[in-house]
Length: 101
Image (tube, rainbow, N blue to C red; front, side, top):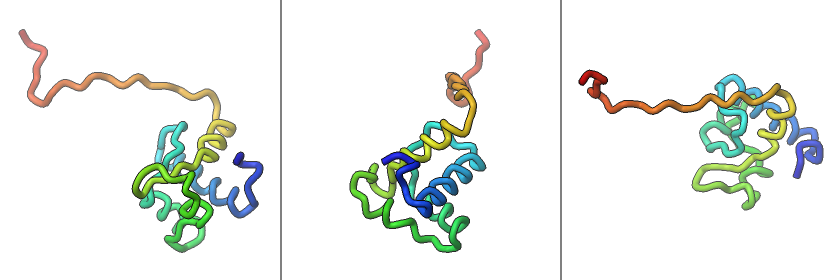
């Protein structure tokens, strides 16, 4: 279901996740959120740690133990942001390794 097909209350919760994700500087393509982060979103959004039932009781939103698939968040972040900047990861050397020969 797309963002614009959700109820106003559901859209407001999704907007809260987007705002929280932006504040935490999460990747713009994030669609899976863990229970701990969603509880923090709930506390900020409605003053209660309870995650909405439309997320927790929908089996299609399960993405592992304590993780939930919420594609509407990535949809909204993509619409509200400019082009996505991809920053390549760099190889990390083991601790104690040196470049000296």
